[in-house]
Image 1 (tube, one colour):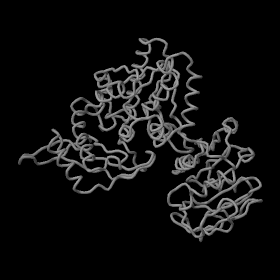
Image 2 (cartoon, one colour; image 1 turned 135 degrees about the horizontal axis):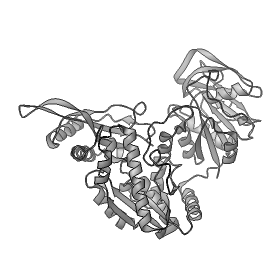
Image 3 (cartoon, helix red, strand yellow; image 1 turned 90 degrees about the vertical axis):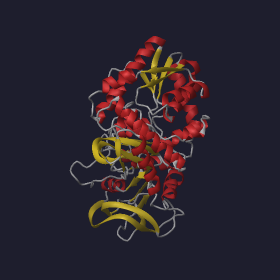
Image 4 (tube, helix red, strand yellow; image 1 turned 45 degrees about the horizontal axis):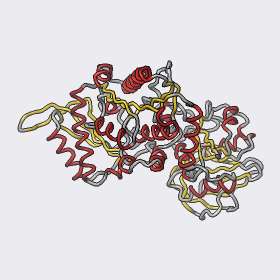
Length: 510
């Protein structure tokens, strides 16, 4: 299988590059810009992509790739900061522009024999840069330009090095998909050999080889990720898999009972159910920090898995539904950027974990997991369910958690989901939920003054959860949700609507 490695220099669009390449049928993977050259060689990439980034190549401390990156003998595509790095290291010249170029630009195609094959002239591209190429490196030719950037696309066919100053991965670049396809197939000579069927076959083989005759515990959360994880492992080792579904007291109303029924009868999995709500709520008492919540929950899950493994006997592996966005947000995988939040099954794991981890979905985006679920025969209703965080309602209660607060949130959340379904919007949204805020608000109910809690409503649209837009809900819908929550949920007298995109916010509040 061909593999494209993307070296990340801190661009907000790096995940989009990976997704777009995968959509074209080629497996791609993101690595930090400072990954050692030996590690890159071991990964065996068929091609490299250098991402964009917010800095100048000349800045002190600016991210640079490992020495020798251009001597690997594989095709390279530089995007924005990536093309500037290419020029800087190969004998070109990069200078600050008098006029920074952000937003739309018109691309004039000078040569259609390579990277810009079949690309329309004067088509829209998306720019985001402050420096520009003043002089291209020896052996390169300019094949595309804009009004403010003469070297908008450069190529060196002999060495198979290519670069664009704009961002082909974003939707605003009209011919971006075509440009990426030209690089992958026409210039790098790759094949579209990445799909869900081949992924399943590869993972089943890997799991059988690594597990042998031993047993695997899989923690089910009720979401698609952990279910697909368990189905792939079950396909590989059958009854050597034991699934555990824990009621941590942080689930939605009726979620535990409904899911236990589905796991056992719809999917024929061997599932042990554990009611540990008292334990979780006791350990979470007094904790207000989001990171401490996540890590406390993660450690408790592992404690219970280890306890059950002892009872079962022979379980040396722990399977988790970790997906690529979990890894990206939990670790400083992105060049110069930082940890966003610790996902409970990534950042919340104890250092002395007695299990070997199996994470078959670790390299997949959410939409790829859903496609995989279809391949495995999971019904559409389950696949289309909105993502639910591993720490559950703990990250939708801002501040300390107790049973009374959780009951208030469950009731408000029920109203939100019910009204979204009634409006026919459920399948159009990525997530729809309520958040309980740590503030009280003065109100008037029944001619009496009240001083009660505030609920925030969050409706977002997204493709993979890496970026998200708030949904412009109709006033009538918001009015129905607000009226019902205030009337039906004891202890709430005010409802607000969250209109924050991701970035700068995250989808969850904690």
